[in-house]
Amino acid sequence: MKPIRFRKPYRFSLKSVLLFLCFFICISCNSQDTLSYQQVQDLFKSLETKKLTHIEKLIDSIGIAAPIAGEQIVHHSAYVSSYNPIHRQPNYVVHVIPKDILYGTQTRTNDFRADPLIKQGMSDSVDYWNSGYDRGHMAASADFKWSHKALSESYYYSNIIPQNHELNSGAWNKLEMTVREWAIENSEIIVVTGPVLKNNLPKIQQGSYKVSIPEYIYKIVLDYYPPDYKAIAFLYPNKNVDFDLEKHVVSIDSIEKLTGIDFFPKLEDHLENKLEAENNLLDWDKDFLTKPKSPVFTAQDFGKGKINTTQAKDLIGKESCVCGKVVSTKYNENGKTNPTYINLDKKYPDQVFTLMIYGDDRKNFSYKPEEFLQGKTICVKGKIGEYKGTPQIIASKEKQVEVLH
Image 1 (tube, rainbow, N blue to C red):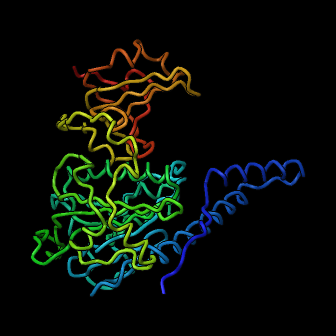
Image 2: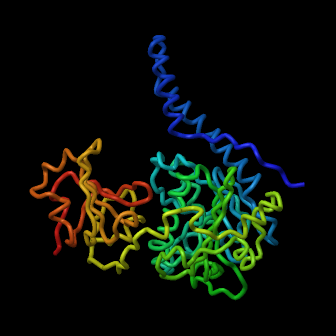
């Protein structure tokens, strides 16, 4: 008998935890027993452990598909992979994106490595280096910004497939950012991502010569909290295509027919049947049809030592020089730090890279950035950070910004 789920499970909010911690510290101060640094660290570690336990139970109770012949199921801190040793990549990966992803501060670790839990058919770096394909995450690393351990584990090859570079850095990246926004708006959501695997797929011609190159990749999103249960799925070809979310939306039923995988078998039948037939974007974004579409742009090659905006997400945490055309700007005079936002190549809310200048640093510029830089092609030097999934560089001096034309 399938479990009946009506009571809303408890969710750990990092914001509420921080408020509790501040309150606890204040009480300790008043009682002349202040918390040591180590005690604070231990408290955060304990809370993260509880959150990881909560996510593990949630995936086990709802997210794992019906058994697949030949699969190796591996459980990590915050995701489960159904690994296919024949195709040397996952059949699917299921993970949870919590609402407090908004407050995550961890950045990319880039420590790609073999999964120690996979006993046979494990792919590795030799299969991918200079293959012409990106090492594409199924569970996006940015979805684990709330835990260094979980984020690092997302770089196991049990979570990786050969992905077209333009798709990975373009439309697919935008899909991942959109799903994170939905997590913030809908509390926790379950996400299942994987390639469509079948016989006679082409192989990467190096390494083991056994890593299949999928033709299609899917992503399934499930909001499993009452009263508004909802689900949606997307199917993208593994090539350079436009984001065009409405053109790639499908139902879970259609993904099941393509893959032969039975998703969410632990849901009650009536709920499973309802959710797996849904494909309505407006259930997730009621304003989707009225949002302006961003113009299409082609990423340029700016020469040695410079990268374009689509490449920036692969260099989070690194010193780089990012180039592109300024297409939208905003000076927030009423903000806490009076920031200036300069978006390159794509306008808000579809931005792919942002130059940010804090209000106190505007005096270091001989011009008003939001006015002077509008429409110009520029290069920005500095350490690439990330805010809400978008790569950014914070510039404090004019010399960090080079105007090309």
